[in-house]
Length: 179
Image (tube, rainbow, N blue to C red):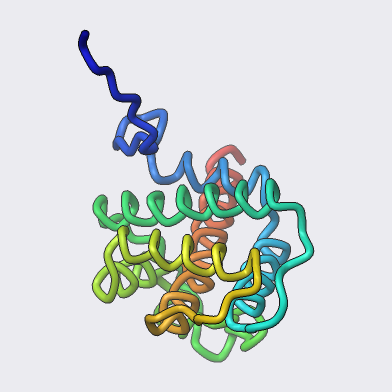
């Protein structure tokens, strides 16, 4: 009898229907930027607390985990294409509130965020980070995550900002082209 194995790994291809931009658009259709940042922050906070767990529906946390994995892969695809998403603004015009965690250079070219993130960590390491914080936030455990989870968290928050900025500029560009 032939053993058949079901592959449960998500499909990760650079086809037109699954391009980086399309994956980012899909993410932001179902997740707002501020809600995503807050949810990621809550998951992170509960992951490092020893005697508490997140009081959110596990299905919501799992869906968020899967969508964040998709966003990280979208950033990786975007980085591979190396298209620039720069904006021509003067340094004094950029408000610190607009920048968030992004530097001025990253604000001008949000693709730099993905390049820096994937220079520091691989996709598997980001998957490990996301799985780890979700795991530790869902229950009470004696142990804490064994790796430094602060830097992947900062990179992930920056990726959220950069992806939102890329899509915002794309919409603005389409709006000016149709006029």
